[in-house]
Image (tube, rainbow, N blue to C red; front, side, top):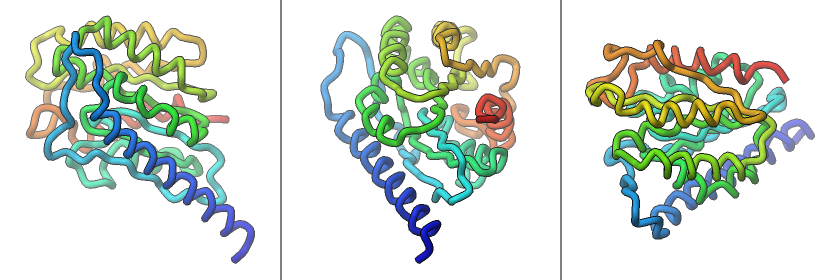
Length: 230
């Protein structure tokens, strides 16, 4: 085996190990009692708790980790039509590691932040808040947990995507969570990707919660420029 092949194999093994730790953290985290003063959602039933790694290649110059709920995972779309796959197509040479988990919230992600740190990504994309809006989480708790999460993530670049309401949600129901993410996007080292005006009611799939393939591609297209360059 050539040295290049050995390095690629070792990197693939390391990414797979970290992804496994992340999903184990998901299982353990769901079993850890949390603040009972606020409601916390159960995992999405019937949705894939995706933890998928793209095999790294010797040509991959950077590693980007994706942390979010089933919106970022692509819901029930074929893998090739999801935002992670879209980003891989748009950003050749960048290793995109999908650490999304159905019904993910900032409070849940905090419980698995060590696995994310072990991955040593060059950038982390967070798309959180839609689940919190769906279950009417206290916006103050959402902001607190998200702040703790970002404080513990050691990555040179952090990209924050504003959350989306479900298609039939009352007008303005997601606004407190959108405002919180905008506030966090002003942190040093953070880049805000604001989806306001990008997604309409016709961009949702049949379940009214997840996006169509075209809408996922549009989101990836808006996120990609934040990940371009060194």
